[in-house]
Image 1 (cartoon, rainbow, N blue to C red):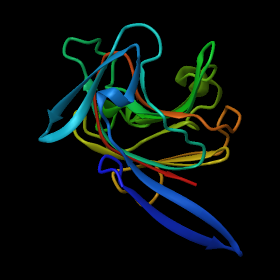
Image 2 (image 1 turned 120 degrees about the vertical axis):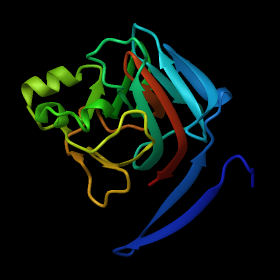
Image 3 (image 1 turned 30 degrees about the vertical axis):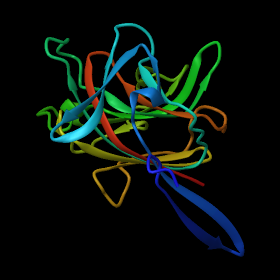
Image 4 (image 1 turned 45 degrees about the vertical axis):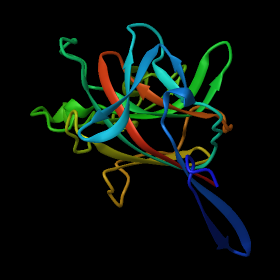
Length: 221
């Protein structure tokens, strides 16, 4: 067994049918990332080894994990995001995880992300916009908010620049976002916008974010 990738296996038996779950710790190293409109460095952040991701001002800003396919299952990661010094006051430290990533003429993915500076804002409406679902292309946050206010975003307690544990459960068209070991999801999406297909997993940031990631683990169903 390679030390770089530690695997655990669990067998579930449901109504006479077996479902194999593969829990795998994925090392976050520069050689394992395909960078799109971002730069990446290996660093130490808050005394923890991490990958720092900083984006450009144009285009989708993601770092795709190489040689990793995902359709249904569980994704877990620790992330920390904050606005870059001197960035626009409207930036929130947007940071998240894209999944079912497909590359072609354009990049397609589903995504959950958080807005860390909203988590403890004095304005309640800003707090209500702390966690967000989007689907690229075609379903940016502003379209979803306009057409379905409050459906694809929610409140969750966040602190900008601090490590935040994120867990995403995916099954078919259903995806659920859990933050900081909460037993219940802070955001539930039952109608993800793209067809159900396997794809990649990517570290995701928004414009003006100083982003850090560590401890990626993927459990495929």
